[in-house]
Image (tube, rainbow, N blue to C red):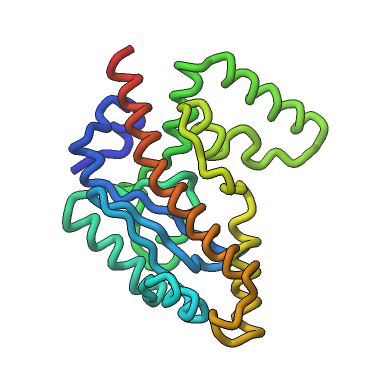
Length: 229
C-alpha cells in the first residue's frame, strides 16, 4: 500500500509507477455547498462528471455523465481500495467532502498536494517561500484576511513554470458555475442560455481540467527535484 506519509516525507518516491496508481481529483462547488462537478485523472485518462441533476442539461451539451453525488464518491473510494491507490488533491476540501458524504475514512489514502508543495518551495525556492510567509504574517498582524494568499495552486504552478490557460481566472470558477446554475433555473434548458452563460460553462470546465491535470505535473516536478538534488 502507498503510504501518503511516506510520500510527504520523501517526495522522490512519487514515481511514474506511483502516479499511475493515483486518482487526481478536483471538486467544484458553490460556497459551503456540495460538489457539483468533479474532474479526475486516472492512468492518464481525464474525465469530468456532473454531480447535481440540475446541471444535467449542461452536462449533455458537453457529453458529460451525470451521477448521484454519494454514489460517485463511494465508487471513487472503491476504485482506490481495489487498485491500492491514493486520492491526490490540492487542500483538505476533497478529503472533508468525501468523508462527510460517504461516512468512510479517507485520510490514509489521501495526499494533500498543498503540504507537499509548501515543503518543496521552502527547500528549493527559499527566497520565494520567505516572501510568502512575510506577506501572510503582515496580513495577520493587521487582522486582515489571509486565506490562501501565496499558497494557491496557481502560485506553485508559476514557480514550476507551468502556464495556465489565458482565461484561467483563479477564483472565478464558482461564480461561473453559479451563473450557469441560475440561468438554467430561469431558462429551463441549456439551448436557451445566453452565449455569455454558455461561455462561462465552457470556461468553468476548462478551469477544472487544468486544476486536475496540473496536479500530476506538479507532483512529478516536485519528485524530480528531490530525486536529483
